[in-house]
Image (tube, rainbow, N blue to C red; front, side, top):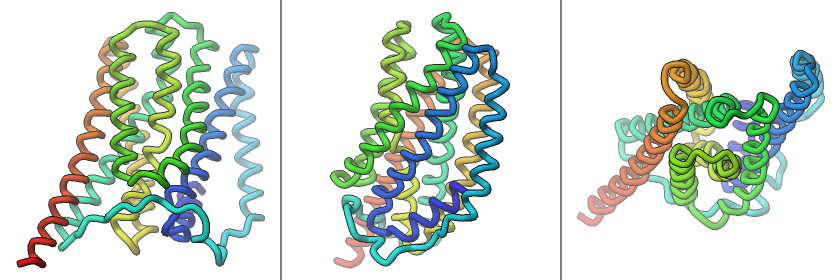
Length: 290
């Protein structure tokens, strides 16, 4: 359902993709915020098994409601706030298109893996690293997703002011620095604050990366979104699986530095995309001048 809705929005709102998708991500984020919050309260009441019933009932309700919602584009889909202009790279052949697609999909795989590791293992990190109780540690997910919802709300405003690449550079760099601070300073109060700001900094990375990829390959929106979704699934499954195994083998600090490494690799991949795009554009311009 998420793939279908996202593909439709990206295809219909060509000049407003990031603005619209940030609003859609707010709705996704609200779901990620409220369910863990409910689960935390159930754990506190020693009734955690009811969490499965809640999710199951909501899934059944959603499967019924989605059949009643008409999904069709409106005539005024491109009216309203628009994304800031981002120049797409001048791709001259199959090789350059394959390069950019590979880099974007690797970014998606890395980011979703990083978010899943941070999101899924936050309670375990706070229990092992800071000695927090289970029900208190589970609130870290609520803190993280509260910041995510706030950040995604602000993304729709920020992306009207700056290009996709500038937004991503700022967001990923902030995430990298915040993770370094968390891995360096062992302070429980500070780590709760850092968790909130990491949620803010990470909130727009996925949606802007997906929109940036679609912007780079005009006319191939549904295909790009499908590939993004596939690699998001691979990253969300493989990287947390590896990270979970390493949580049993290494110290919490070592695992935090691993998250720092993922963030650095994500930033390096983005730099490669931007640098390669600029180099291709200069090459095409020089050929035209020649």
